[in-house]
Image (cartoon, rainbow, N blue to C red; front, side):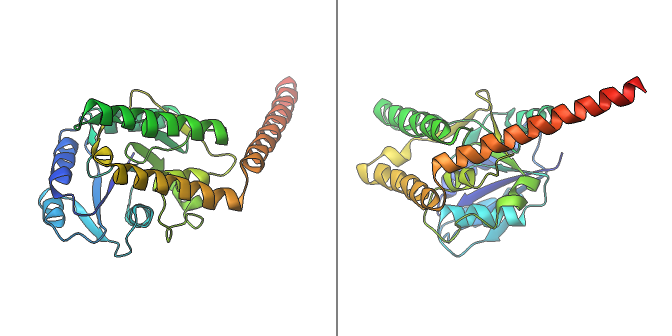
Length: 260
């Protein structure tokens, strides 16, 4: 399995250096690392190149546009996604490969974040508002597992199916928007043992927290105006029924053939 790691970055040189160092220690190395320069004016690009990463440029500001450009440029069968401040555990890529090989039906795999830095209150906000509450609420509303952008991997084949639908020109969360584009037959696998450290810095200030929440709510608003949760869940149920009917019919036909 050829795995490309995609990291959008905007003036995060110090965090990016730590992220790339963690990737260098993976028990299963990345086949390709792409750093998406989303308008950096610091040393982020130089650090990426020094670490052997390939740099692609997305001048249009926004996490979704940067992520989309990275996925479009990646060469792998699987696109693993990190933020510049993500610190993946040493077995992260090995676990991505093992789980997606074991579960060929999964379009993607995701975990959540273990927040580091900041105060206990900031880490509590990260755990309960972002990687906890928001994640569980979205899963309940959609009826399937959402993606967590700081710790996820998606098959290239799944991305090619949905990339024309993502709102890459909007200021929205990339993981939320990509999750909403999943077709009824697509599902993500949630692995609680897929470990990535995530900086608690968005909670340094109320403004930072509100900005993060605004991106998520804007993604929800745009996608729900296009198709309601009820309609999305109905389409998924109808697909499941058709699939079950076809599987049952195939089983009967196979039994007839076996009997001669």
